[in-house]
Every structure is written in C-alpha cells, then in structure tokens.
Image (cartoon, rainbow, N blue to C red; front, top):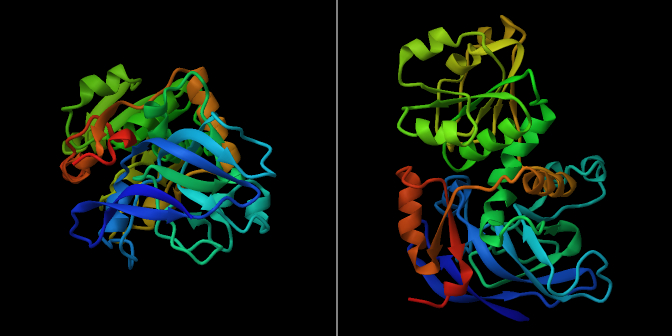
Length: 349
C-alpha cells in the first residue's frame, strides 16, 4: 500500500485532524499523483456534514485536485512521470453503459465513483484531495495545460467544469443573454466562461456589494435580487439562467426572468427540496433543468478553453491547518472566490 498524509473529518462537527490513509498499489492503468493543491468546494462541506446522506468516517474530502505524476502502471499510455495533471469529482464509472460510451461518465447508469465518500470497484471507500497522494486510473485523469498554474487549476476541476458544461450544452454564445445567480466560487467562474463564449452576461446576486468584481471579471450587468424591482425590470429577459446557489431560492420568481424557450439550469445543490409553480414553465415554454459536472472529455475541453482564453479562478491559497477556518468563511460567503489548500503544508500544525 501507498501511505499518504491527509486531513480527515472524523465526525460531522469536525475538526479536521492530521492522519494517514492508504492508497492502493498501482494497477496496470493507474497513475500515482503527488497532489500539490486541492480546492475547497461547498460540496465538501455538504457531504462531510452529512447533509446529502450518511457518511463513512473518517472522511478526506476534496475533488479539485492538481498535481504531478510520480509513477505510472506498466500499461499506462496517456501520462508519464512529471506530467501536470488534475482529478475532478469522479475517479471511475462502469465505462460500459450508454452514457459512459458517449463520454458522459458523470451520468453513468450504474453510478459514477466519486473522488471521496464512495465505494470503488475494489470495495474500498474513496478518499479525496485533502491529502498528499492519490492513485487514479489514467482514464479519469486530465492534463493541465502549461498556461495554467497548478494552484489556479485546482478549482477548475469542479467549479470550472460545473459551470462550463451547462453553458456549452445550452449554447452560451454571441447574441445569447445569460444570467448567473450567485457570485461565489461557481458564479464567478460562470461569469468568466460565459463572457469568453461571447454571451451578454448578467449577475443576479443578493446585494451589489460584489458588483465591481462582477463587472471586472466579465459581467455586463449586475443586479440585486433583494430588490423587488429587479424581477419586474428583467422579466422575460434571459435565454439561459445558471443558478449556482446551494440554498433554497424562489424558483418560480427566477423562471419569470426567462424569455420564450429559455432555460433555468440548477448547478447548485441545496440540501432541502425546491418547489415551483408549474405555470411558471408552461406560460412561455420555459424549462427547468439540472447539470452535474462534465465527462472526462469535456473536462479536458474546458481546461484547454480556459488556457486559450486565459481564464483562471480568483483564489486564496491557505495552509492545510486552516481548513476548518476556511470552511466557516465559505459558509459566511467570506472568500473571493475559492480557497485552495497548499498540500506542501499538510504536515504542519
């Protein structure tokens, strides 16, 4: 077994503790990655605190992983020692169902294997990127382009692909009016990517306190959803709305902002159910949809797109002993706009 240092949660309440975990010995198609940086995602908090279902503790979260290949299995053909690589929200799937065959492994009919908190094909619980090393089959590893630094690359493996995928699928492009609900870790990436795709971009946030950042990062307009006039002024405006908020919102109110045949796509995943008035849909042939990350092929496409357009997340790099503090700041919306753990500090207290 390969031993990795890690920060693990041993209960929903925390705190994170320094520990060691075992990684499997390399199979023929596996790569060993020395993790350099790991992003902190709101999903880490939801999962670890049991808000999305039962948890097997201790749990090492983290599915925004950037690092360097340090060893490869004898049949690996895609990567070599020293390559700059990333791992996102999944580390395996059945690879045989229709969805996997289409390159949509995230929608594997048998259920994709999450990077942490899942049971893999070896019967072991997966552990994530708040650790020094990880072993992953080469088919679920992506290459980080030279134009993107590793610390900035890490959040692209979830926040980047989670927003890129629906924008690409629903056709964000010149002439399209796109709104982004929420301006945090996901929202600021959605703004950057939609802008690079040529769409007219509007941010819908609770307040306008981040308006200057929003306009600087690519938004054309910025509105406060706490102002009732916003919903009157923007009624019937947008072709696409991407909701990045992981909290309960009034879906019917946001559906009213869609133009004919417009779509509201949820990428934020609140713990509680959402409800809507069906007349919000049928009146203007509107759609309410969901989207979950992207397949491996699309994730690589996203990384290459970001490199080409010089898109990187706004990050704050922290040491591993500040994870608990960072989580509280995420919950308080006190980060602009993504925390990234410097894994070289993993052993520090």
